[in-house]
Image (cartoon, rainbow, N blue to C red):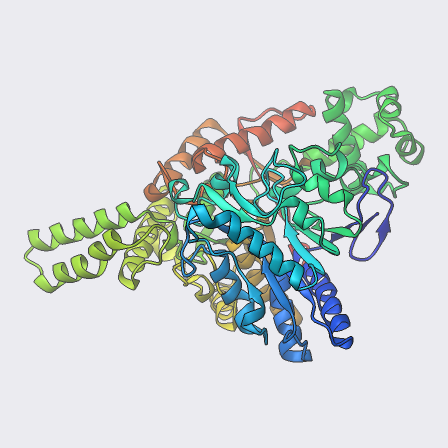
Length: 628
């Protein structure tokens, strides 16, 4: 059974209990209440609850909600036993990437947990002693009475913990070889794939299946494909997460993006009766174009019937009538001048100092050409995405310039002692010195100004907000605060823009885009609640995805000249070329992703029979919601 946050929907193709929430935040609150219920139930019997917990970005909201329940409602974790699900082998417990350190900082130390009841893998155990250590770990689970609730995530390759594809279904706790895709996905945490350990300690799949209850989290578009395979395709050892369907008490907790490929969500008209409103009609007809390979105006009544859309014809008329209506809707989305021709003040919010040109650089060029006053606000410094060798080189350049022009010798000493030497001495993935982070921040600052200049935007229209939530020097960020929101509000009130652009991206590997969007949405809603007329707000997607065709409300056509200028602007971000740190599992450089995505959007329009353009950038209008 698949459920939305509010309405139960029959899921004919999904065996395991599956719940779809409007947002990851809603889902995390639900799971936290489940865990709290188990803990309270065991406490009421004078017994201790035993939890198996996983680290990472998906469950962090669960832990934050549990911390809130502890601090505000007195949720008692003093008797709870905790077992970590997996750990990178060879990492010291204090390394930033250590699951142990992550769990301690993000959860354990914020609760009233008795530390003697918290169990972690010892990742520094000599290899010849690992088997015995793993058997001891399982013995500790048994001594605690077994795991009452096991919280898991699903990797993009279908792995659960470090139970990689083609692992044994009956495997026990062990040292496992990490799949290449697992290491690639973890590369950003370690600032290079070469720094990611090749092995990891993990609860075995057979061990996991012995838990009394299992809750599986999956959030974001990047998990949509694997969720569909795990829940709808035949169970296979190629996707270990699919085996979890066989557990006696398992539930899959998804947000709308992770569930988007499931039949009940992607094509609901195939599993139940639907209301054929304009949105559903557009979605179904564009899906039919894709299935048949036909343009909109070539669809026939037989095509609708062959693909199970009889009810749409009954509700909306003939194939000709329905297709012509969708054709008209899609034609109206094509807009060469997205903000009109009358001069306006435009504010583009960019989470990092390159998201603007990567995602909407062609539109920025068009806005400038149309005579608008374009401002860009970079919400974070993006400094952790600069390679050490770039910072070292720039420090070297500063030293040479200082010497060349007879500068103060103390500057050279500072550059060497506080930047270059620490960069050479630090371990992969360790935090930089403050001075090195400042140099990296200035690198991104100078690149952003140069890229904006390539788009015709003067330096006085470029704003650097340096939101505090980002300023950790590590991949893990702080929760946003009033200070973050105030900086955004101050800029909006100062500029009074006529239109705003915000990045709305669920596939950013470390969630900075999501946090930045929510901060901006919150400020706009606050202004709205105070009676302020907020400007029209358009949303763009980042480097990892594009809006689905049926959701696009404005498509800005780009000509070859536009794409060439956009590429030039992206190239001004030199530190993000040729081995950028946060490319994720996609090895293409950001400029390649941008060009191929924009050309694919134009091709999608062409395939449904609309005018053929070289490339397109797509936007939707903000609907006023807080959640992504």
